[in-house]
Length: 307
Image 1 (spheres, one colour):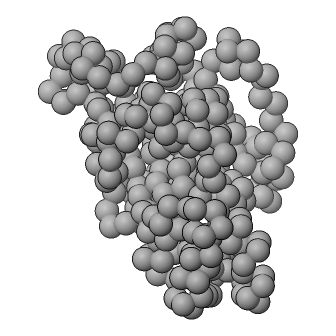
Image 2 (cartoon, rainbow, N blue to C red):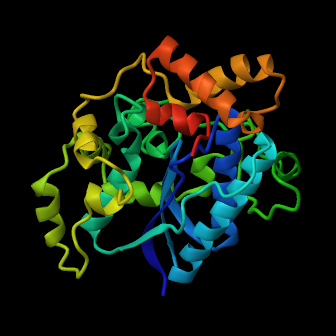
C-alpha cells in the first residue's frame, strides 16, 4: 500500500558534496532513482552530510530508494574524487507520515533543514532544497524557465542509459529542476496559501506543533525534530538555530572549506584529491586550517575525510 514517508540517509564522517558539480550530480541521482523506484517525490533537502526527502510509495519502494541512493551516490563520489570504501553511515531512516497536520510538520521540518543546521538565515536562503520552488510567483520570485528541455540534450548530461520521463527539464548548469521531478503543486495544496506557507517556514517549534498533530486522530506520534533527526548530536542547537542564533554569514560552509583544500592544498602536494593524501598530510592541513581560519575540529575532520 502506498503511503507518505520521510526518509533520510546520512554520512557524518565525510561530506557528500565538495563543489557545485557534486550538488548537481547528487540532485540528478535523487531524481532519477526516485523515478526508477516509482517513488513520487514531494520535497527534499540535500545537506553536506545527509539527505532528507519526503515521498509517496510502498515501503519496499522507499527502502529500495534509500539503498540505491546510497549505492549510486557512493559510486559517483568515489569515482570523481578517487576515494574508496563506504561513504554513508550504515542503514537509513524511514518514517511513515499520516494525517494532514503530521504531513505539514514533516514537510516544514525538511524544508527548514538549512535553517536548523545554521547553513542559512532563513529556509529560503539555503539553495539545495525545495523551499525556493514553492509559491514562487506569490512570494515575488522570478518564474523558472527551463534552459534544457530536449530529451536528447538531457540524456547527454545524465549518466549513460538513464531512464527518465519526458517531463524532466534542466537549468543551464545541467541540474534537473525540482519543479519537474517533484510534486510542487501537491505540496502547495497542503499549505493552501502562500501566507500559510510563509507562516510555517517562520514559526518556532514547540508544544503547539505537537498539539496540532493530535487533531489528526492517527496512531502516529507527533512529528518533531527529534523524530526526523535521530542521528543529529544536538537538538537544542537546532532549536537555537531556528531562532537565528547560530547562523553567521561569514562562517565557511563545508563546501567552502573543501574548495580551499581542493584548490590550494591538493595541487601544491601534486595529488588529485584529498583521498590520495596520507593521514599525516591530512592532519598537517587540518592543523594549518585550524590555525589560519579557526575552523571547528568536527568540520575539519569531515572535509579532510579523517574518520
